[in-house]
Image 1 (cartoon, rainbow, N blue to C red):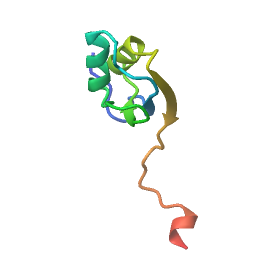
Image 2 (image 1 turned 45 degrees about the horizontal axis):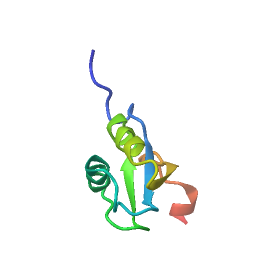
Image 3 (image 1 turned 135 degrees about the vertical axis):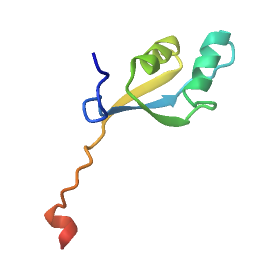
Image 4 (image 1 turned 90 degrees about the vertical axis):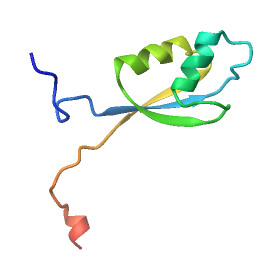
Length: 84
């Protein structure tokens, strides 16, 4: 079985924002925050929606907020607004 191509993969992305401090959190939770690219309260990072990322989000769900964002497909077509 072949792995899915880029066009068949999920095009969703996740915006993760840290809302609570990692002070007092377990070392694995602090490591998960670092792996997600978060270091301070209020910082956000846009990540691909993959199972590995979802696992890290579950580890630190009490410290973050998550928003799902649908990424637009990039096509070679030009819309009418771009030609004007």
